[in-house]
Image 1 (spheres, rainbow, N blue to C red):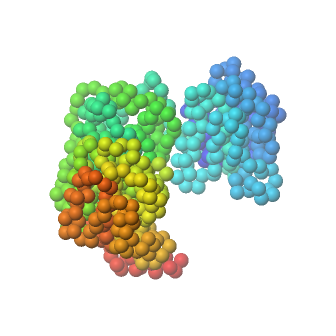
Image 2: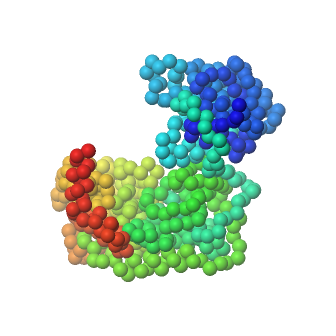
Image 3: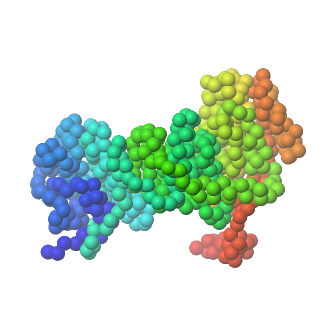
Amino acid sequence: MSHKYTDEINALVLVSLLKEHHIRKIIASPGTTNISFVGSVQFDPYFEVYSAVDERAAAYMACGLAEESGEPVVLTCTGATASRNYIPGLTEAFYRHLPVLAVTSTQHCGRVGNNVAQVIDRSVQFRDMVKKSIQLPTVHNDEDKQYTITAVNDALLELTHGNQGPVHINLITTYSNGFTVNELPKYRVIRRIVDSDFPQLPNGRIGIFVGAHEAFTREEVEIIDEFCESNNAVVICDQISNYHGKYRFLANLANSQEIDLGTRQFDLIIYIGYIHGAYINFHGNQLWRVNKDGVIRDPYRNLTCVFEMEEKEFFKQYCGDKKNNTIYEKCMKETKQLLSKIPELPFSNMWIAKETASRIPNHSILHLSILNTLRVWNYFETQDDVLCYTNSGGYGIDGCLSSFLGSAVVNPDKEHYMIVGDLSFFYDLNTVFNSISTNVHIMLINNGVGTEFKNYNHRAAYFGEDANSFMAAKGHNGEKNTEVVKELCSDLGIEYISASSKQEYLQNRDRWLEKSGSPILFEIFTTDKDESDALRLMNTIEENRSLKSRLKKSKVWKIARRIIKGNK
């Protein structure tokens, strides 16, 4: 029989990446559900396939093969209770640190618990049976495929990561009989580098993207700067990146423009730090992650290397002679030109950020609530020694104020500034009733609605005013009542000032910024329309002027789109 592979993409990815990770030993138990996998490997001369009818015996056999060969071993079984018989052998492998990969094939997960024959729930494993368990659903689109590629790489790397041990893949099949693929496709391979075999940097533009990050030491900044000088690199930042070296590029302004100004495309992105919150628009041909945890994190589905080490150790490996840094020069040139072209903005969070960000005092700490506030304050630079934070971990509105006040309590010698929207402020109001330290400066942007959902480029904007009631939560928290927060502050001993116009804001701004003997709250009353208009103005300093683009912005286009969607 001529050898061909299954047309089920999840199985193809698994078979292909087994080869790329040099895993060749497979123990197959008979069945129907695993035919797509078994039928793809049994004729491929790369693999050594063994047969074991009893899955319990197969798992123990894998332990012996792994122990003596020093190589990972794959198990494959069908549906029903076959996989339950792996439990003793995988437990043995777990405690002996043997790299055994259990590939259990199954039907669609939606059939679990619905009285479908030979379908059992494999979503939960014993803690001392496998190091990691991954579900591999069928592939219907590119996002499914990229997830599958990342997940399979993750599973195969975990076999020998740290303490070796068993890993589980639950491979869903459609029972396709289409063994029609002549040549096994090549898929993206992820490598983990610990202390050697550093890959060569690609030629071209390199972007170091810094997610949420603690304050950098001087040594770390100097090493990153030296790396940038050696490799035509720039450091892509938002406010919570907290990198303030020579090659900082606060990217939101340039990269949010309707057209690409030449600051978005990179040959390589090096990702350090954790979850970011600014939704910066950029693209890298590939992604390298540098973190001492060594975990596979693939937010853009283009990860190829994970470096399990300290950031400074990574950057030291690639420092060398200085080169012309064309990408940094380009980023700075475009940013400077955009800043010089900013039009008159309406009274809004964006205007306030423009007038205030650079005035946040030296050596202070700035907290930004999520989404709209974080976004607009990422358009303008603060001073280099201001540290910035937000709740980017879970990225919810429910604890921004509490996190800020907790930081202020533990750092009484640093002035703390917070910019927060009304929904987030009132959601997290309980902490204000505690004893608040005197180094607290709160700016409350009160537009009586969830502005994020009223911005021109948000999907809720499609609903217009109909978004107010249930999507944008308009009408809650006093609906911009000018006395609610004022009276609360009076009761709690918090100094209160307010503004409803640019003039009033500028009259009170310095009072809010300066150090005083009591906490202070500055309530700013804006409108969601002004907020949206300001964001649009900032994002269209350089706009797409093509006929198609202009048509899409017209009222006629929007009305036509509504009619078409309404008729579907």
